[in-house]
Amino acid sequence: MSVTEHPRILVTQRIPNPAYPLLEAVGEVEANMQTGLIWSYDELLQRGPGHEYILSLLTDTIDARFLEACAQSAPRLKLVANMAVGYNNIDVAAATRLGIAVTNTPGVLTDTTADLAFALLLATARRLGEAERFLRAGKFTGWEPLLFCGAEVHHATLGLIGMGRIGLAMARRARGFEMRVLYYNRSRLAPAEEAAFQAEYVPLDELLQRSDFVSIHAPYTPETHHLIGEREFALMPADAILINTARGPIVDEKALVNALAAGKIAGAGLDVFEREPLVEPELLQMENVVLLPHIGSGSLKTRTLMATTAASNIVAHARGQRPPTLLNPDVWV
Ligand code: DGY
Image (cartoon, rainbow, N blue to C red):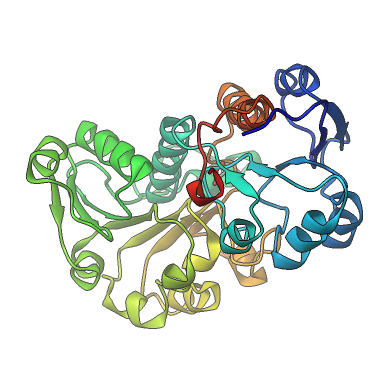
């Protein structure tokens, strides 16, 4: 691969500071420096072409139309470095067809995301949001035997949908709470790994029927779209709780609202939503749900690592080296 002399680099959102000098060392950086400003698709389409590198976020729709515009421009787009482990916002097949490399940031956010997923599980089970709102409203008048009694987490059964890095990290956390761990995944773990994680592989329907907590850790793909919907909620016990820190559209959010309203499940902890940043209005009114603004990987240390990992992919490519976390190796010839 040839070295690109002083390439043009676009950074689409404000990212942690340590990533900028890495990029500036290899090219000319144009960056959206306004915290909280997410460019619209049209703005992205206007700004993207003419850059060799784009450091993108999961809020950027990098579809075939965008990629084609960037591939036809001069200079031509060479690589999109997504600052996320998930890359469902990018049409990787179109990028590959156009010879554009795509990278993500696996590994660096595993434990931080699992920490948040477990925190959300605990918060939902023990009704922390509801209880805190009650206290802040000045309603706490003294200890009561039945005040905010929630579900027990220790020794309960946790069903993990998706057993990649983050699913495994959840299984490790669950062991500390002496939970029984069931999992459903595209591929089964090796027997030694199942034993090490004390995790039992079961079909999805069985997992839904047997779990007190169901936590989703699968990527969003056409196969996982609405993986959990009306039929699946009907299989879950009435006291079950759903946790989603993966991607919103894996759950049919309208079906979730109906299941919660009808008492088919007891609660939900959600860090992601089907139409982010929109949230089904009914969910906002429900006390038995805990809702977070997609902060799974949100520690400053982890977000910094994600930003520098994305930047390192651009730096490597600009220096003629293979990007360390390349998703479409076919473009690397
Ligand atoms: C990801 O990386 O895919 C998360 O959703 C954001 O950290």
